Length: 337
Image 1 (cartoon, rainbow, N blue to C red):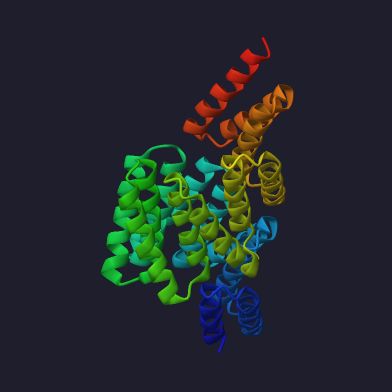
Image 2 (cartoon, one colour; image 1 turned 45 degrees about the horizontal axis):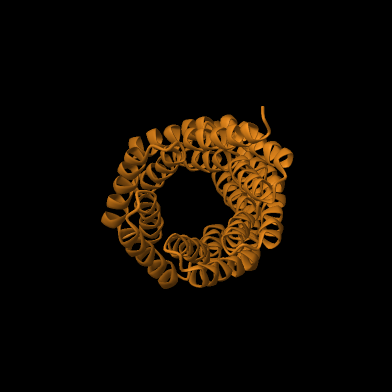
């Protein structure tokens, strides 16, 4: 019964029905506690932690995951340990602690490879790809994504395939190959729709919006971003909401509506600050710095760029550090400093 409820919770989460998913996992947790089944307790705490993470409650998410891993270590249950280490890696990555996130992912990967647990191995490789991408190492990121995709294709694990296709699309876009990027993103979105995986749909729509923006098709980009934002709001998926508000701010900025752009950016910043999402905060500070610079408010611009630089340095995001440093230097020269 507890296992069946847990499985129903996982399906509900994939569909974006977070309240229903939480209810199933809480019922499963209660049964496992009643039975004194510690492995089941750890698994359900981990699942509840993932739901809290999606909602943006990172402190609650970490509390659940730390409780779960303590039980898994007590039992010496390696599969559960690997799963929870991966979850802790995601939380560290969201908060911008890339070194700590990588450490968690590598610990999880080592255990999963030892156990021959291919699906989780693929997930770890994908997450390590994200770390490499955040650091600007596109070749290493692409290698990890391709390794992950190959395993998911071998397993016919469609959810994983969609995630890695989307990641490869981001790499292609960064390299300027927009046709290849769009092809990857459309494949990813098609799978997400087939699975009714709303979180994946929101991500795919956002990525297609970014490609449309790069191509200068702002109306189409705005349409994609608004669709993605609507899904994020439906799910209570705060990180996605912040991303889309930032994207809509960029559209307004390109159109010359700086007031609307600043409003979107401030709304995005408020969410990132709530999440203690350092990379997101730094990115928005940089955008606000540009707005202030265009408006001629150089002192405010300098402050924003300085905050962006400091946060990017904290998370060791080297390409962004250099960009923020150049922006700060440019404004300081205008100020005669």
